Image (cartoon, rainbow, N blue to C red; front, side, top):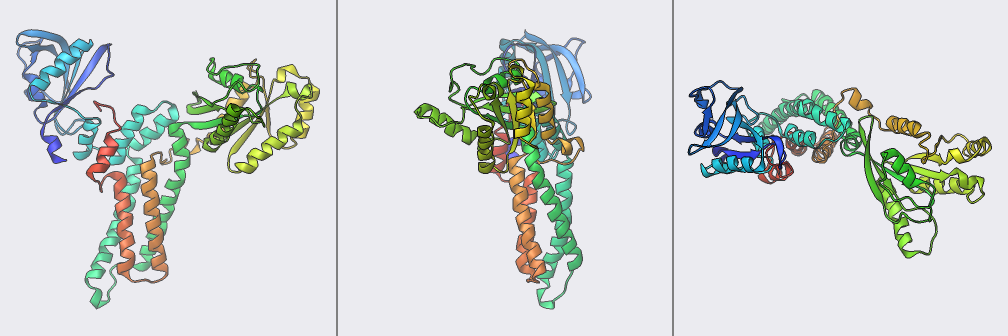
Length: 470
């Protein structure tokens, strides 16, 4: 890993392709010196190696008296830069030709193309951020909703890291005393107060449990809440999807069984992303292809956090569908997926009278219903308000620490299991040398989160998912 930091790297930091401007980033001990060789200031002779950090300079990038482009060069000197090294950012015009000419000019001088995430990797290796904060950088770039943005921002600011580091340090202090006891095992002395240690383990266990539980919220806020829209064929599932998306994304037809595959799309409601899945209708059929679609419907319900069951009030009015059958279908879903949140919607309210609405309300007794018309977009606001309430943004709005990274979730679970073993050891008065193994394991897993414990493979897997130039 140390050899990585001996050279200077370069990459396009803005999106590839033509734009008004492009930013080319260099990092490394010699980055300022190398750029200085090809930079000619607009304001007389200027040596970039001697200017102050965090300054911007107007001039030309020149190759053998040939002006490539007029640029703005930003200088960030070690250690006060993103990577902790000398960093130069060149703002040039957004022509792809200009971008490549400048990059190739420096590569000929011995600068190397940066690997994916290598700037952030160097920031981590140089102590500018810990590993969980580095991962939050990638999440921040990928965020596509206010909720996922806020989760990533909270993690990047280091609240989660501080909590983990604090727990690990307290555990490490006691682990040191336990190790000291092992060194004096023949003298039968106790350096670690067992009551105090037991209280600490209970505290760590509670914090880890809270963080583990927060993943259920954090994961969906980060990746979007999957919502399966189910019901009999031709009740308006595709039309409802279109009304929510406010554009024609699904094929709408009056022929039963048109939607034979799952159609997915995403919408942002009150800062939270929802991934709506319109599925094939649930009914008994001899059509082989449609049977495959129905099987996929149950697979999609399994993947969803929220299920919307939709039925057609006009069919109820025309006696082509009974409320008893709808209630039976809902019971089947509840029995098969008892932990799923279920939202029941009566569609085509614009085509029936108050009598049908009253009968439907009575049939469902105390079960909450949303009456709407997907085609006329009546009641859509009530639906979106209900979805917002179900999103459970309480922890986010209260600024609580939320875990959204599956690697962190796994490490927390492993640490929690080790801590439980320590608790058992203390309760059963087993010898110190036995439960000290579990203490070391807990320290190891907590260290994995912040990067105090790393391997080259781990870092490679994490930073390979970054974009080039970050």
